[in-house]
Image 1 (cartoon, one colour):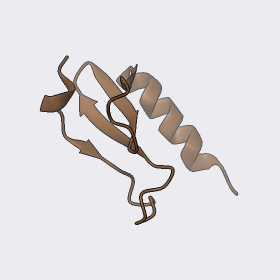
Image 2 (cartoon, rainbow, N blue to C red):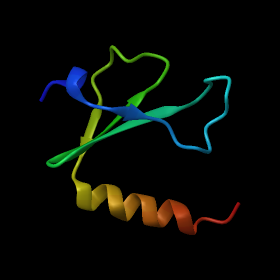
Image 3 (cartoon, rainbow, N blue to C red):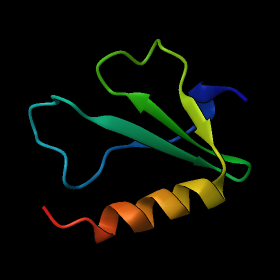
Image 4 (cartoon, rainbow, N blue to C red):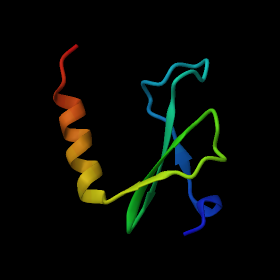
Length: 63
């Protein structure tokens, strides 16, 4: 899977200064996650089901 053909985006909660952000790209077979500061590092691939579980859990966390 070529990562250059994907549309990468950051969370709307990410700060404007670019520190400590991850970028996400959606693909029918996987959700890819990468460090926005060094996009040369290979992204993490997770299943859409695993990403949905992670996102649901992260949304439940109260800080």
